[in-house]
Length: 250
Image (tube, rainbow, N blue to C red; front, side, top):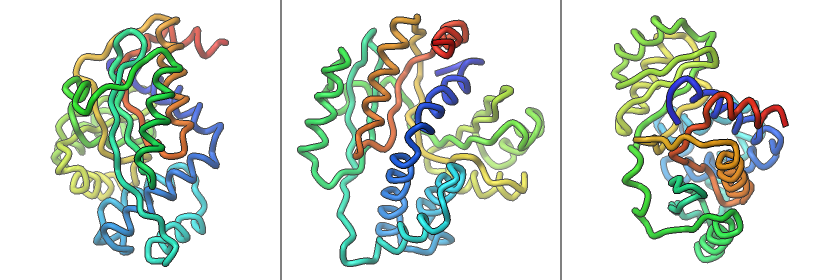
């Protein structure tokens, strides 16, 4: 996704996720538990856990839920999850990357393959679409966090590589290895925590979709996100504003 329509694409998908808040909380809890189990339960010394908690708070996840997810990491009944990545193509040649946390690799791979097939796409081998993306850190602040110029200056000072701003907010991009440092520097400079901060697969050359193509791609993404094991889905597509307006009107 690129250009002015970027944040509207994000908000369109975010709106779809908000309708399934309990499922969103379940996935956030899983990420918090995994982060705590891998790096310890102290968020101050565990950057992954710190970002997972910040993302959960931005989604209005109750404090008790967050604390239970952290405590579960040291409990005897804590599940062991494997981090998996699947790649494939949606309709129109759009590349899709799926990240999952699973306690059963065979089940999740089969489920993801079936979802691709039912949506008119196909799951490929590892690396089949990864070349279409860059692995970067993305930090998202709401529009009222700062003006565009102030955000750009703060991001530059914090060591970020790029900033994209519009009326919906500011997306700050940084080298993957510098994500945690940039988040800390920006939070201190702005006096506000980001709405989200995570590693993403950023499309190099997004494919512009018409209404039919957008509907097919969004159906695939929503079906993938509805799977309990799938954490995040990335695609190298762009939905023009006029097409997005048609979709929102339906």
